[in-house]
Image (cartoon, rainbow, N blue to C red; front, side, top):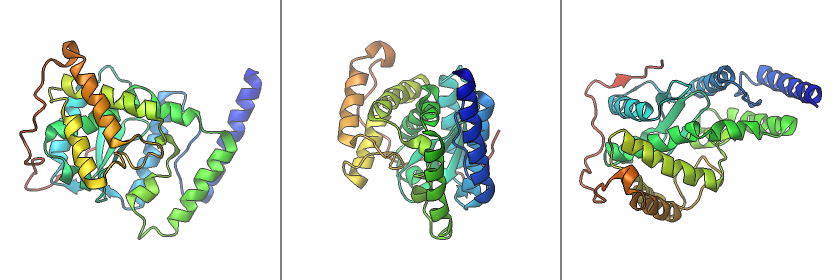
Length: 274
């Protein structure tokens, strides 16, 4: 049985490499069974997005993003990967995490959040997907050659319109983002825990969901995800979770007070990957 598994995995790997050679180094979706492979997949995702011109290398929001991200990362210890926080182009309010520790947030999200409590909720949610193993589990459930070929085919179609392609259109094709509703609920809760451990108000999750609801109705945050639950449902669940766990959260104020947005640097900080 083990030998058959190894043969099957070798065939899938060979097909992936063949498609990558023909498609200008597209992201690799073979099973990620160790940290080195996670980092390799994450680097390929980053290179793909950089090649498509979606990575924002200089932004007045990098200082705030990096400071909040470092606190959330510290709260998530011990972790086996290095967290990096990257801004991508796009007016939509979206974020996603990739194998190896990169968390991507859109310019639109950074302009929309009212304060760093809300940003911490988003970064906590994306970090939770990594900490809880959701990203790797999605990679491991890719169904061999058929899934790989379908994935590559979608990317080939999007590549032809590179100049007009949006982040949502491209990122939405990453197979590891199709989380289940239960995984989304779990990331909401763990994200609130990480935000609180990092010193932020866990109600930032509710405030952020309220911002999303005003913009998109009940369509839901993480529009890259194909099966996300409704915003109204997620808001209610997180609120119940915070209120029912005073030992974990204490008694934070549910009232939104700071609505001035994120602090911005005057010079525009640059992206720094560790």
